Length: 298
Image (tube, rainbow, N blue to C red; front, side):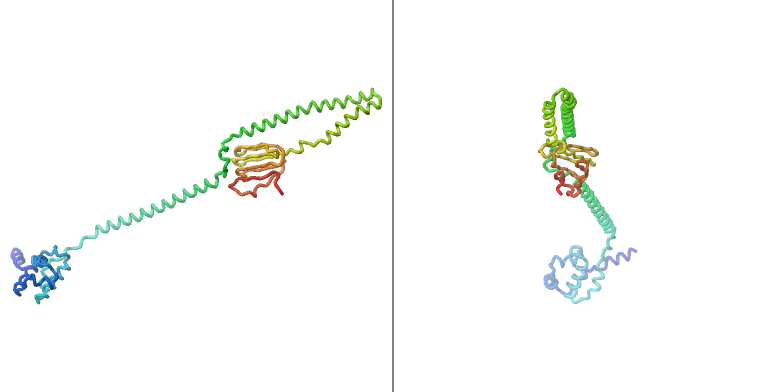
């Protein structure tokens, strides 16, 4: 075993063979720099077997072949002296990199799906909010007005109607008493005086018949709110008889002189009747204020 190692160490290397052939041919390094396109230091490294400083093993083999061609010697025995190339590294790192790339691609797809789902949720929420938003422009500041305003107005109208009825009742009773007492007085008067006494009564009766019936000029609006909506109503005399936000399930009845000017925030959730007759307001565009007159124009 020791003899074989000694023999191997005694054998000249590739660089030593090149240097020996050059010296035997009596050729200097300077004369080889031009044909080989190598510097003197590179040629010295080649003859000193310092291959790692000359680049990859493929380049070193090319330098040796050109070197041998200039010396007219066979390059095969010298190339055989070159050390064996190092074994290729195991692709363990490459496999790890592949796994990492695959994991990153999977994470990217997962993030993309998450962004798509998030965008769908945000878009659906925005669409739902837009569809359910009440399109009230300048009246938004009055949305929070309580229903007590309208209730107070209704109570005031009720009190006014009761006071008018109470005022009319004594006048009616007085007229009844006058009519019942008149025949008795007629019996005690001469015929001419009785005729003259009954004439003013007939004139008053005729005047009362000719007076316009104010009750017939009053109309009643009934609204049933299936959902929360804003409402404002003015009668024909310009008086506001309804105003505010009405909650779902609220039934509203107001009276006044027609024609009425009506504004509804959500007309599609309100059922409207005029003097007991239903009014069709389904033709107005949704998600917009409905402004119309009652009774509706033909």
